[in-house]
Image (cartoon, rainbow, N blue to C red; front, side, top):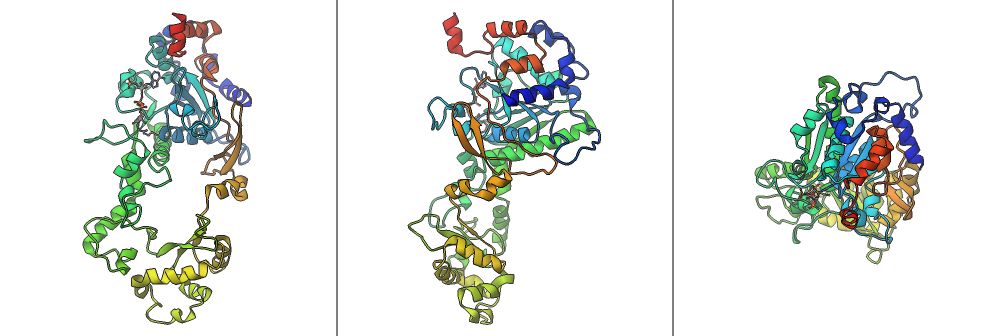
Length: 481
Ligand code: COA
């Protein structure tokens, strides 16, 4: 419960705690918002501090987030904000919670890794957003928060009564941030999951081998990628609010986020009008280009040709491979390393232009060399010559990587019902805002704490709201009836 204590300490300084506790949420809703309530004043430009780096609080301390996110895209965003110090209050449906709590479970009756790995450093409150008393609690929370983040299906937030107009009237400073599958247009009403976004954002049509079908990637560029985009939108809107005093809507559409990450492929689409894409190995193989960007296998997306090559141990070890880039400035070193010193001066090989039509043959020759080394031996030798390369690392290898543990990119977390597990920590390192990864909350773990500390309600008020059924699961309501 260290987390609860820490959060309590953090909220102690907030003016909300000094407010006289409302008798009921209904009564509180009628009161004008306190001038210094968190949503109307807690986020301001901080006073200069003399505290040393790493001890001046976290970057987003004082920012309170009403987190209506679920599954992956939205939770990725709010987890980042929590790691940067925001107080993230995750609102979950009573009894069920975020659907991922129960998806892909590996430990019976414990929150899944799917959930725990996306919801660190957050607090959880259960509220039935369609219950009249639940709506009132939400209205009060809106007044106390700086940002509402959601990634419901299109229209769901409005159907809860939480329209932009309603939120804005309660708290004009509130930023309302949404992930949707598509931006305005023919598909705006569609529900979208990761792979749909990869397909509609240009990733699938440009991933895979030319002769094979479109392919989705393992990296969650649709979900986690869009969550990252949204987080940037939110902090940007918070920054603008320091000047305007106003909140605004922030939208990150998954199709847009994926297309942004596929920017180089839209570049290539336009280059096609001016001739073949000479760095694609298809060019060297003499296969004509059509009018759209083809799948490029393991070709490098930039101007320096690259490919994945077998190392010692392949193919028995499915990851005994290395990515090898024939960067022009180190071509001579590559020739020496692989034992082809004559290629340094041979006009057929000496220039990048001369090499382009022969890339397949050149990589086959380099592979003869890489197959005599393990991927780590090859990496060590090639790095001495500044030859850009990277071993294909398995998840098993990454999980055991000591340097990633040291930097906090891979972290071990303890959880009361599932025990210890590994997670990916904050990949963004701020020298003056150090991330401490704390376990994800149990469903509704902080319901009472949030009602009393954030809303300033008294135990009797909390009991009244609970009795109304606004915070409990429908099964319980049925049993009680
Ligand atoms: N209390 C009461 N009802 C709640 C609730 C709460 N605390 N939280 C959610 N609900 C309700 C919603 O109001 C909605 O009801 P409605 O359809 O009657 O209005 C319902 O739960 C389901 O929400 P929805 O978002 O439609 O969930 P879904 O499981 O059907 O769809 C997605 C999931 C991800 C496809 C959809 O949310 C979506 O397209 N989101 C936007 C894109 C996105 O983020 N996709 C990636 C997810 S990783």
